[in-house]
Amino acid sequence: MKKILTLVAALLTFAVVYAESVQTVIIPRPMEANSAKGSYTISPKSVVAVTDAALVRSAELFAEYVAKDLGATLAVEQNEKGGIVLSLDKSLSKEEYTLTISSKGVQIVGGTPAAVFYGLQSLRQLISAGEVVKKGIKLAGVEIKDKPLVGHRGVMLDVARHFFTVAEVKRFIDIAAIHKMNVFHWHLTDDQGWRVEIKKYPNLVKVGSKRKETIIGRNSISNTYDGTPHGGYYTQEEIKDIVKYAAERYIEVIPEIDMPGHMVATLASYPHLGCRDEKFEVRTRWGISKDVLCVGKESTFEFVEGVLDEVFSLFPSKYIHLGGDECPRARWKECPHCQKRIQEEGLKNEDELQSYFMHRVEKMLAKHNRKMIGWDEIIYGGINKSATIMLWNDRNRAKAISLGNDVILSPKYFCYIDYYQTKRPYSNKEGLMFKERILTLRKAYSLNPFEGLQPSEYGRIRGVQTNLWTEYIADFERVQIKTLPRLAATAEAGWTIGEKNFDDFARRLEHLRRLYDKCGIRYATYFFDGVDEIE
Image (cartoon, rainbow, N blue to C red; front, side, top):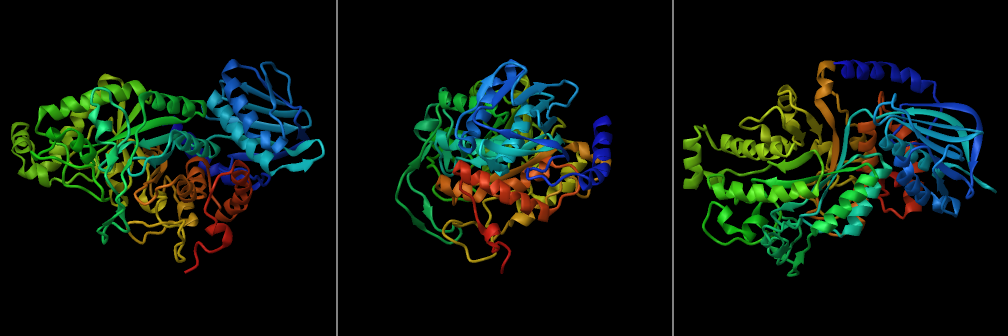
């Protein structure tokens, strides 16, 4: 309750604070930014001083980030004297930081190393937008106090439909870090491919990671295929490397092993796990398959536990995403094993059969002190209070909130960045989509985590997340163009406390665009060209 009252107070008072503050270039917009006397010029000779060994790696990364701006990599030293001084203050909350620029230099103080890292991302943007002078980059005096609105600020990448390399996944994580996102949701398995090595079940990558071809054109009307095999998976060592890489940027990697639906790649690898006694092929079309895991067989639960045991060893995250979405009931209705399970467990119907499955698997997580996240379909048939609901269907919002579970908001009409981002005829860079769905930058920015809620309900919103599904996105250039700049909009929705202003966001986005350019990051230009909302 204390956290909720603090948040409400911040929401009520922030508009006044921001009205008195200076214009900032930072995205997401800081909680408070006030002008200060003096200025400081960062030069190639500036030193990044850290007062705690836990801050060294963040300082080193920062020095690498701004090397292009300064023409040199800044020295990092563990002491209390330097042009840029990083330190910790336990009186600040875990993601709260202050950033002060004066004639004496730059000071960043954070409640934790993660908070200091966020402060460095803000400084990085200030440097990118700073005044280039003879000796380096001149920064105006400023005092920034900042912390995020919500705890979970996620971005999801689907690598099951199209595989992306380790280097590309790391690049995606770098992009997330610029925007102060703290969760990388990694969608690793689906009907069209299994991407994580499980040593107990080698066929998952030997068979399940490859499909013989891929549909060309829109799934609903096309019967044409490219005839080209597509595949790929991550070894356990590669996964550990990516998890470590993300952790250095204070990003938690949450894996998604989607079940009991979206499992055709699994059934192709181990056909006995299905309801039908026949062979399966890794799916070459998009959409939803009627073939799902058989919940009536104990061998299914033995398999799931074996998979999760290895997943636990690869991902230290407290949360494991189990999917639970888009699971047709047709096979269960005609399966004697599933019908027997319904009868023996006293279940009312197939909806409760899925809940039975999710409850059993959630207990596997609990034994390892892990918690479940599932898409909002997990509420059908009943769920435990310990489960976190990831809301993608707007129609389920009221019910999800009423249950009292933690909720992560990811509504498709605000957060699905595979949707078209312009109302104009679509360029080749846009590719296709299932339907003519459009998510402009302005629409993405309008997401309000607490819209329609009572203050007493604010605490149920754990965070926000944007998702990139890749059925029609086969290359990493398009991943970036689809992601940016809309990720910046979601980042501000999850971070910035108080009233938001799209015009001010647009002004700041011009500066962030310069940082994208310096980093060689691709992005969509529709908004900057003024054509994203033109009919």
